[in-house]
Length: 294
Image 1 (cartoon, rainbow, N blue to C red):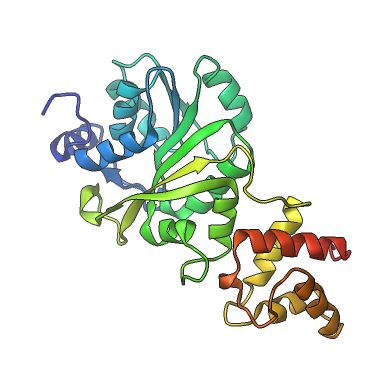
Image 2: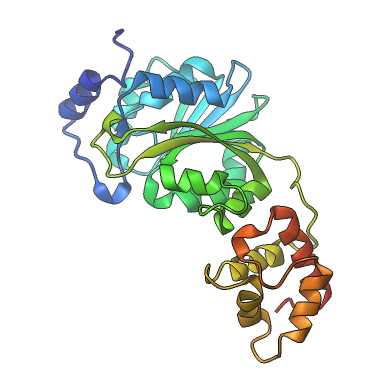
């Protein structure tokens, strides 16, 4: 194994000990120590010397180094100031890598893209994300309409399964719909907890979201569409009619709601997890046309 491989258990431990680094549970720090998993992540990202990569939470640079060997430009955003000197040292051989100190949820990502990636012809986010902020980070990346090709991330297995779930399955919910509205999700591999230092308590998975240029459905009002989706899943055991009545018709009878559901071609007795993305689009457009936006 060459000296450059940060991700080997021996080298990871050596770097951590030499810098006196201690893991912060509050930041969800789990460093990857498996070459095969890193290779799977890199392959899924489809990078080459014309493309850029944005990494979130580089840790001590195991994935960053692999990205640097594949891409024309790598920018890594790290929230933990204690890791900056380590990253500066281990990434010294890679002048095309920039480390930005900051919280990705607070950064102006459009500005960051303009500054960092103006000379590349495609950017992907590639990261081992801290599990406690996975969903807010991914939704920010998707909702801001950034010029992204792929988002390839290691996340909690259960969350990955929810993102990729199909209608009718137990895992399918408002997160599935939101992610699939903006991207095409695909599970790349399941990752055991033994390939991290320290080991997390949960199984992980690598998921690739191929970012759509346009949503696959036509909605008149995006914010209202997501409002309808969230309302539909408010209580999973209730029917779609009961959930929508609580949210949009609290003081009225069911007749008008059932009329509108019929107009959208949806049986009132169905549950939220049986409706497709297309059906939610039709339903939200029907409810919007009926003047139900608050």
